[in-house]
Amino acid sequence: MYCVFPSAQDRMVSPAIALAFLPLLLTLIIRYRFFFVLFYRAVLVRIWNDCVTGLTREERAYQYVLTHATQGDPDSILETFDVWCSKVEFISNIGPKKGKILDRLLMEQSPLTVLELGSHCGYSTVRIARALPLGARLYSVEMDQRNAAIAEKIIRLAGFDDDTVELIVKPSDEVIPQLRTDHGLERLDFVFMDHWKKCYLSDLQILEGSGLLGKGSMIVADNVLFPGAPKFLRYIRKCGLYEWKIHRATLEYSRGIRDGMAELVYQGIK
Image 1 (cartoon, rainbow, N blue to C red):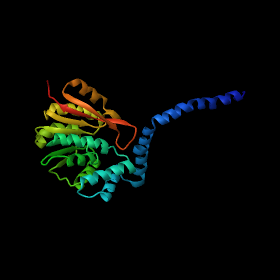
Image 2 (image 1 turned 60 degrees about the horizontal axis):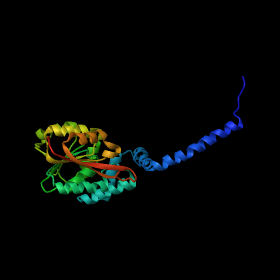
Image 3 (image 1 turned 30 degrees about the vertical axis):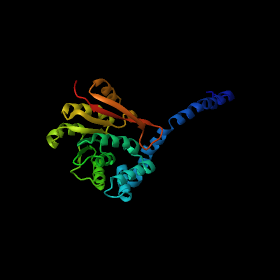
Image 4 (image 1 turned 60 degrees about the vertical axis):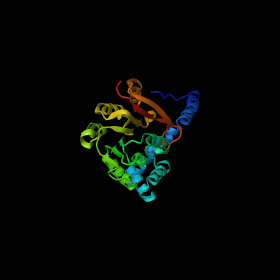
C-alpha cells in the first residue's frame, strides 16, 4: 500500500480558498451583525442566566422591576422594564418606540373595551391600561401560566385592579368565542395582538366570526415584519374588511432590525 502525501502546491490551495471566502464571510458578519447581537442577547444570555439563577427570564425581570420601580406608578414600571430589556436581558415587549405609537392610537380611539392577546409579563398590559379612559376595561389573555403569574404581579404592582384589567389564562382561540357569554361583551373597540405570530390570522378570523368587531373597531398587531406574520398581512390586503396601514419601526431594544406594527380599522362586510 502506498501513502500519497499532498504536494506543496496542494497544500497552498486550501489557504488560498479560505482567503477567497474571507471577504464573503466578513460581508455576512457585517450585514447580519444586528441579528448576531440579538441571538446572543435573546438566546445565549438567557440560557446562561436560566442555568445560573434557576429562574425564568420573566421571573428575573419581575425581581428587577420590584426592587427598582415605584409601586403604583405605571410610568416607573415601564421605564424600569425598558432599562432591564435594553441593558440587562432582552425581552420581546413592544418597547418604548413602538409603544408611543400604541399610546397615540389609544388616546385617539379612547376605547372602552379592549382585548389584548399575549400579556407575556405585563409590559404592554400596563402600557394599555394607563392610556384608557375612566370606566374602560382591558381583557388580557395569556396562555402560559408562569408568564401569566408574573403579568398579574406586574399589573397589580402598577396599581391596576380587577375592575380595570382582567387577566384570562387560556389560549386565545378558546377565549375569543367565550367573550360574549362569559364576560358579557357586545363589542370590542380595540384589540392588541402580540402573541404567537402564527395565530394572528386565525384569531383575527375568529374575532370576525364572533360578531364583536363593529365598524371602527381597531386592531393593532405587533412584529408583523420581524419575526413577521406574512399570512396575516396577505389576508388583510385581500379581504376588503379593513382600512389598514403599517407603522414601520425597528425591533424593540435593538438596532438595525426592521419591524413594524399593523393598524387595522374594521369596515364591516360590504
